Amino acid sequence: MKKRIAIFASGSGTNAQKLMEHFADSTEVEIAVVLTNNADAYVLQRADNYEIPTHIFNRKEFSQSDDILTLLKKMDIDFIVLAGFLWKIPQNLLTAYPNRIINIHPAILPKFGGKGMYGDHVHNAVLAAGETEGGITIHYVNENYDEGEFIYQGKYKIEKGDNLEMLKFKGQQLEHQHFPRIVESILKKIKK
Image (cartoon, rainbow, N blue to C red; front, side):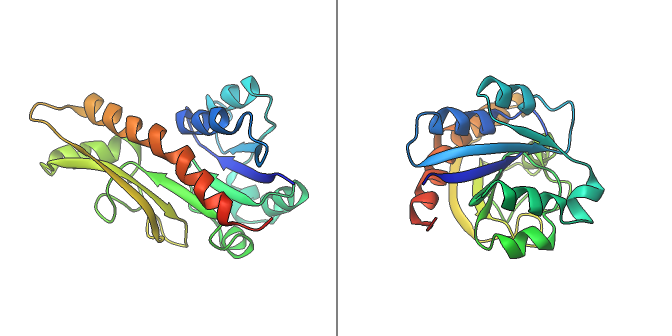
């Protein structure tokens, strides 16, 4: 029996696509569904390209009901990956999937984490702080933004003259290199 992943994403979905590519021919892991809170998210097209079902939801359905949990259970989802998903995960999902929800964050946590710290906001804060290193953190998700246990951190050097686009590029290189590998290594340890 394949382990079944649900990916939550709010935007373009480059990390989601890297996961789709990585597991496309897997005999052990299947990306079963891509869920988004944004009907215009490009991740929907990426999922369609891989013939992966999608589900678009609103805040009420996500945070004030068991609709999403019911859907995940009905689809026999084993593991949840947040790949650029911007909403806080509600308690019903945290309870149903303990240590089975992970997120990728575009900074070396605990610096530059928390509510509102995503995408360009993170990179601009890193630049404004004059940091000499940037990086990524892959972590378990708990009830607070970016505070779950760290699984992996990768770093890159920030050179003099690096701008927002360079930080995004360097960070994305790390994300694409490590995220699928880390997800796979965690899934190997999970019982179906």
